[in-house]
Length: 299
Image 1 (tube, rainbow, N blue to C red):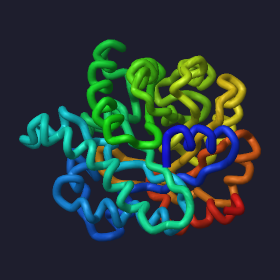
Image 2: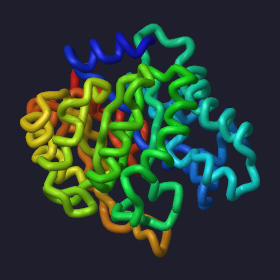
Image 3: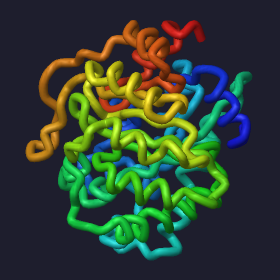
Image 4: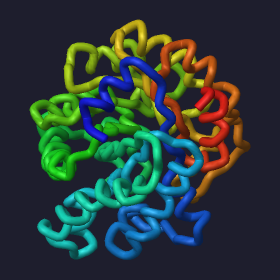
């Protein structure tokens, strides 16, 4: 598809997003206990990434989010991967999602993931924000990777799991002029960002930016979604994107999930009615749950 058709569809209808890429890869037997996380497989087992994306398309997802969340020049450099090869790997994330979309008889889209600065650090700071960097430093981190992803021609950018309105300001600047629409989604706790800012203040960062076609939340508890949807719609007037976790919580020290799942596909109609137009799941939400989302939305 094209970025223009993506924008038109988001503003006029509802799209089903995929679920957690990492849990689908782990379910297929791949070890992701690595600082590069799923991005490692871009180099080592790209066919596994294609298979994971395809599983979500087959489950009813309209949009696949690429394996570039943790794919950064800095992260690859720590593994001895040079800048040119890193460019190839980052761009390949879009190509692999495109490959997975072949053979279907319905429109499908690819959203290029750009995770927060804290994802590159791989120390759990993506759930805290406030890295001690200026907006200019964060812009300088994000812009080069976004330029590479834009050259690969995704339908959209997924500026996702953003913990901090300060980083959101840098990301909003970084997508300007690249010719690719974006959604901006925060990781939240209750009615605040992970860094503690009120959601109304955080969503307002993107309210006047033409490139940002949707705002919302991801990688959060399902119970935090509906209130965030209403706030995002009220503050920005834009379509809203939501893709929460299963409800379990990530223990950064133990590098594992704890608690019980509370994600239920029957919640999605309330999210849609509140203003959500892009609806899916994040960590620990698999193809079966995505199929349930599609069914609940009458897809």
